Length: 90
Image (cartoon, rainbow, N blue to C red; front, side, top):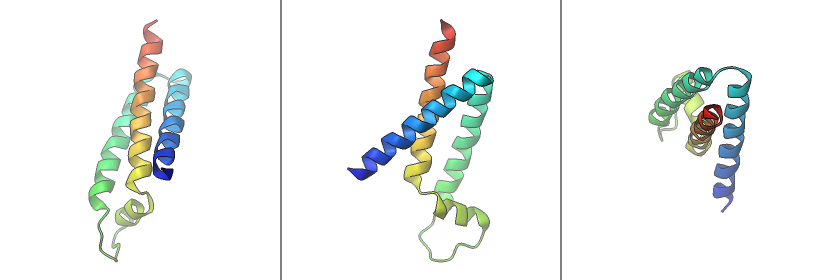
């Protein structure tokens, strides 16, 4: 249950950050940061291997940021982007 709370917390915080950033700047900035975050998350997920030696900095970073944190932040970011788009249509 703790992981579900952590997922919800990270998702909520990242959605709020995306909405606030989109209101301060432009919606396109939120989109491009989300796209870059998606690419980095996918790369980090594939580099997060189970071996005991992390040879490169990217592997060390992928080990440091667990998939629960990165994917929940990414999902929250895109939820925030969708809410921001809905808010700007009105």
